[in-house]
Length: 190
Image (cartoon, rainbow, N blue to C red):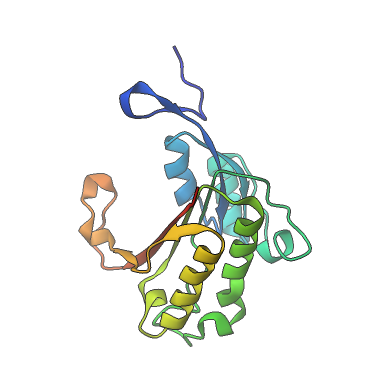
């Protein structure tokens, strides 16, 4: 029996199928992982035109551009979905640069993510950013993000999950570089 592309075999032979949105998608790293797991992408956004063209070539879906135009207080062009993923812009939180956090326009893009979550209530949210977003410089923004998730009805750890490619075994995608990333995983409470 052939398994359709949007379904994968899970534990003990069960099948899984889910929809996801891929925000700040780049060339599609999250898409690659979720597609292999049985996910079907129903929406992607990527403002960089070159990355968006590669995403389209890789995945057959042309990402929308500016998420602030597609998801805000007046407009919601993002369709319903089960899982939301995104690597929202890290420049405002990075140690290199001005470190203005949510005081800079790119730093406020989390609020567009929050609007999507508020409207669609995906079961799982997975966001990625630089280590510095969880402090010490941006501890206030970190607390705002965690509090917002909880106010929207999600379970999320107040402690960041910090991962660096050099700590992941090569067969699982690890690389010989130290580039710590923070992952924020939130699940919708019943």
